[in-house]
Each structure stands twice: as structure tokens, then as C-alpha cells.
Image (cartoon, rainbow, N blue to C red):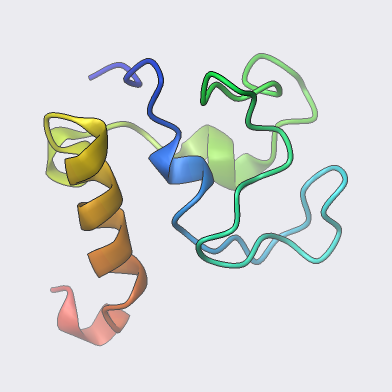
Length: 87
């Protein structure tokens, strides 16, 4: 699955504990990444500065759903579910 245009849910909903260019402490859950543009596209997507955690994320229907609203709901649920309860 390819990333959905004008979504950006993965750049807003999850927390990121590793440093991001311009966000040395990472990104709290629910906070828009500073590299997400006005069209919900990552400005670092093809940059070598793109963090490893972002490069490793793969769009999958189980996470991204069929539309942006489902992606936000799914990622929100995952962000608030203890990892021990996921599997």
C-alpha cells in the first residue's frame, strides 16, 4: 500500500521518542510534526535527514484503513493501547 495523499495521520498521531530534525526531543503524540506541509505531505520524505523511525513505517490497511479518518482512529487506538495488549 502506498501512503494516502493528504493524510498525514502517521505524522500527527503517534509519539516519536527519537530526535527529528528541528525536534531534538522527538514528537509527542497528537502533535503535528514540523515537517508536515499544508497538504499533509512529509517535507523530509526523500531526504537523508528523514528519521529512521519514519523510514521504517510502512502504510498498511490494518493501520491506515481506507481513509484519513480511519487512519487517525486506528493510530490513536494503537498509541493508547499498551504493547502487551496488542498481541
